[in-house]
Amino acid sequence: MVNFRGDYWTDPNARVFRHAATAFMHDCMLRARGQAKYVANVDMDDLPFCSGDGNIGERLEEESDKKPRAAQFIAQWILSQQKQDWETVESPKNVRFELSSVRILNRNSIRWDYRVSKKIFHRPDRVIHFDMHRVFKNEQNSEGLEYEAVDISELKIFFLHLRRFERDLIIPKLIRFNESFDYSQLIALNHRMTTNYAIRMRNQAFAEKIMTPWAHEARTIMRNLEQCRREAFGTRLTGRNKMCQQSSSGCRGMLTVGDRFHFASMTWLDLTHTALFNSYVES
Image (cartoon, rainbow, N blue to C red; front, side, top):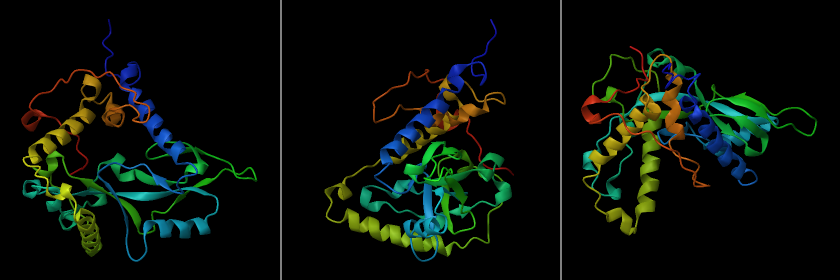
């Protein structure tokens, strides 16, 4: 028998994640119709950011007035690195966002697919078919014209991609950073986030709950997620099945319906020392 396990074209398990990712994103968007004007599908390490005065909602409203046929606004997705000092967090009240430690990567130091990919603010009532980074089809307006995707890369609205948990933060590669970026914007944002967080934590019993030693467990979980990308469905990532690296998007079924996936047994041990990780940068 020909061993086709992990081959993107012949092994259906190597691409089932594509259907899973599409399903849960469309599930979210359909439920948002009539409930929200703008929805963005983002990862936990993506931080939507609007520089200067105003906020994201106000900026998008301004652009909607200029582009009445807009179904979505496509924004820059900026890769950065941020070291974490998790050992100092004993309880929720100790959480600090530490955006002052963020370093934006020089565009030429970002892996090609991450360099060209962008993130999207959708209008749920106008979109039909899409994935995390692309739009395939939109609804039509009353005149029979399809609503359009509008690129707002030139505006100061973007998604900050905070890579917090890859090995490159422990053993850094020789990469270049963007020294022209206005980092004072992130310091101002950090101040607003910290202030709002402190207000939400005020008089909350949860704020005092002792959570240590959680840092080790957190790192283990993050490394497992990274390895899930690298060794999807029990198959190791190679030049022939690179698409498997996106499988983490399908690691769980849609929460709204309680579906479950059948998992392959883990084929790696002791991630701290032996795991292979994706690299998002180029030297």
